[in-house]
Length: 295
Image 1: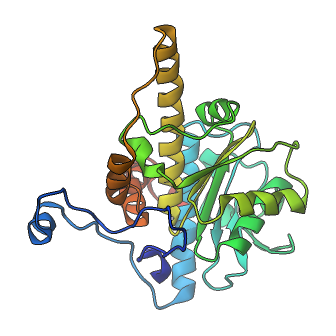
Image 2 (image 1 turned 90 degrees about the horizontal axis):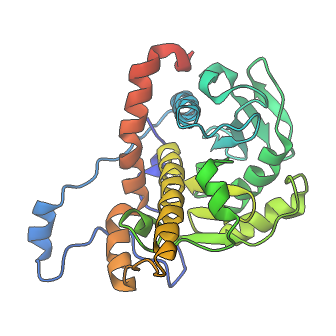
């Protein structure tokens, strides 16, 4: 189950960010469109914050299994965090040095905004970079339940180009006016200032391309943050391939018009769409691992 705050899309003040309202095609009445477009189901809500915490820790453990399954681990690099519903000024994260594919609910560690480990499993080692980046994001974005970062192959390759995504596929429209480029690299993020700079650059968007580094995604649910990461990774892969193919022929890729990209975003780029799109990923993990990750 997921927190009540994850049920409704968070409003933003940015004037250029598309509306999260589900659209209907031009020329189709709203009533007819509602019949044709099924409403996405939503994450479950809780009244007991401790029960919510227990459920979310299980979803976070599953998220790490998904990252392991897709090869997003690179030695000890990479981290996913979840804001604690009982103590919102703390978050849960993977212990430093434990393989994504082996992480269980009981392995997760709880960290406060001073970097102190206050609860968790037997391996109480904290990745300093995880704290600097995620601590700053959670502090700056109270709407964010989960943040995900890893050094995935296509993400870090694309991030070496110093550019944002082009809108060249339907899937890339999930990030239309909803991702940023952080144009700096100062080595491993061990300083508070850089973590704050990344959070400031992210603003109210759901994804950041960290130049010469990798991808960062956030969501008001664990599922959304995880799906945005997988989708952004694949969008980077698609653009790298498409740019290479087009360039080899002396051409450029065909870009989606702004109006069409904004229209598409309203269906596939919303928080609810992110949560629902991740459901099959989590279902597969539950089937493949059984109750192991929930221990």
